[in-house]
Length: 355
Image 1 (cartoon, rainbow, N blue to C red):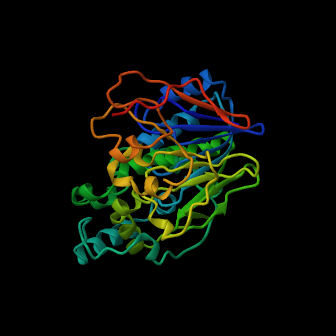
Image 2: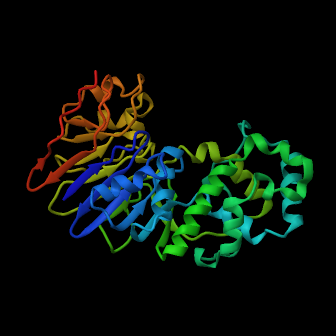
């Protein structure tokens, strides 16, 4: 088994190779740079390509991988929070009443993204026909990917400006690009919806990858009121990072933390083996320190990926005994972290010198 933290300069990109398959979680911020770095590490076939959440320093590289002809991808695992919005846009592309009703609901209820009364995304009553992603029209997807922002609300005229502060159109475009590239490549997409609880959901039979805080769902279309509420809840959605765990019966675990604060555990244990690898959540940020105290009694190897920043990593991370960074605080050197497991972990990388 081999684990790599790819030096993507900014963001996360982790690779796990085991039993003739490879798993990649997140892709960093650069669309083009990640392709050459994966090829440099002899990665051509990707069994599972997963995304923890849709921040640019995690998702951009995934777009680059999906759009490259250098890789053969079997499965793509994506957070489900955006697919319903895209599917709704594509089936309502010529439905003027739908867009007018969105604006009416928005103005009648005096909504904005700062409203404290906004519901949690999980509590929204999503209704409509359930359809798999294969039914998404490729022409509509291409329109979403490459058109101007007002494509979505061109029936609203100048009133589009009222929506501008609250709608993350660029992220919708990015997810549409991934879906488009995935369909064209023949890869199967699995949509994982965040759950605020420990789920231990086995994603597929291909590998031993588990979603700790999500379950697989199918995309559906939304009514106008649910559509706009979903858009306004996106600030909360972006914090709901998926967490993946690789569980092998005779080897240590690998935990892909994303930017999670692990609140979904609700007091439950993670059940990691000694000498498991854990990726530092949110690049070692001070706001995500819970995991360090939770695992302090175990022999855990932490791996952190990030560009140089004065604010990272936090003191809790610096105090850890077993840790590696792609770029250490106070050091300009950048490197891909490689750890090989053969009864014990071996590496040529120097340990973290953050201080």
